[in-house]
Length: 460
Image 1 (cartoon, helix red, strand yellow):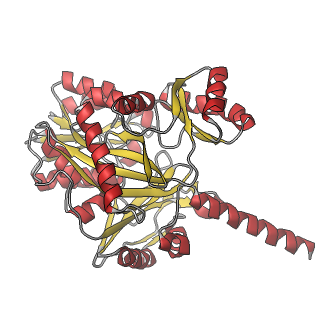
Image 2 (cartoon, helix red, strand yellow; image 1 turned 60 degrees about the horizontal axis):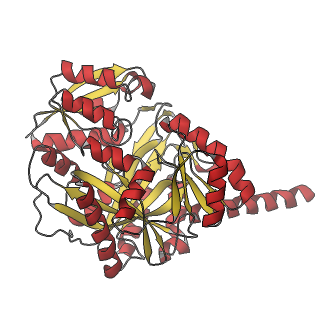
Image 3 (cartoon, rainbow, N blue to C red; image 1 turned 45 degrees about the vertical axis):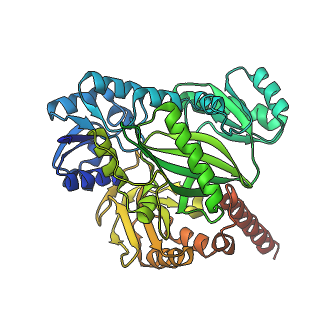
């Protein structure tokens, strides 16, 4: 078993890793920025060390600083969490050369699946379903020619990235002409790679993902699907498992595809295979070679501790499970509580939390790093907490989530709590018939209604 785990991360995921280390009897060492000096992970870790100023470039993305901190604290391993250096193959290679265990996959897998175009080609070679498209494009004229061949609408995506950056839907030649340079610029800034790829845009799809766990002994386990279709600007807001539109036959098909991909690339650690579902037809989108933000809902219905499993796999242990298709019970939902103002186009709202009441009770879990008096810094992601509900049925999970949202109070900053109440009470969500783009559609309809009311008031 590893003995001293370094955590170059912040927020709820850093705290999640610290708790897993404590349960395994491992010393946790937090590497924090100056802006996070008073954060809960820094207060609860066994040891702490500052790795740089507030800016992520100078701290959480500063590989020389992280390496120096690991050397000074005598860390034998590093858990990157998600974001920052979690999918950086160069960082992993440097860790290996420094005799530090990286709690995650090998750099070859990170490099292969980190390049979205190369990932698509790899999956396509294995005769698995991929959305029709063209990879690694830089020249505009060639890209436009390929887009016309595929047929509009098409999705433009950054080859080296994700998270909605460098991504646009073009429904015509004019839109494609306008969006292409903007996507290239975003991709260059975010990932230092202007290469893009285009694929056929599927109308009203579902975003479905399969959690995987694989050890060095060739054991690969796949979990029930998570539905991540409730998004805004390609950023997930609400996730649930199992999906209300996936039956046992489609679930097994998705799981078999995910398991085969892992076997082909010889994957080790936790990861997630993401699909777009057009009707009942799944298409491979990408693979996230790290722990996901939404991993708690999978833990709730299976009883697995995915973060502890990552550490155990990195320690050379076998996964303890009797079935490659992991069984589950019940239903779980996660709402990402963000410090954003939904009435102002989800504008981030850093500031001091003046009052905090966290919900509880049967079937409720809260993963958070905030506390009353905590000052939310403006330099990072706006995620404050992950509110998770569990029920024997989907209906029970929804009722519990609504109850928990009503109990939850965060004052001093704007949050998405009330927005989520409206979404969960909406008939379309209750029926399970939502899709990628539905949230933006109802937000647009709301704005149009407000403009009509405003226009009528001005007439009077």
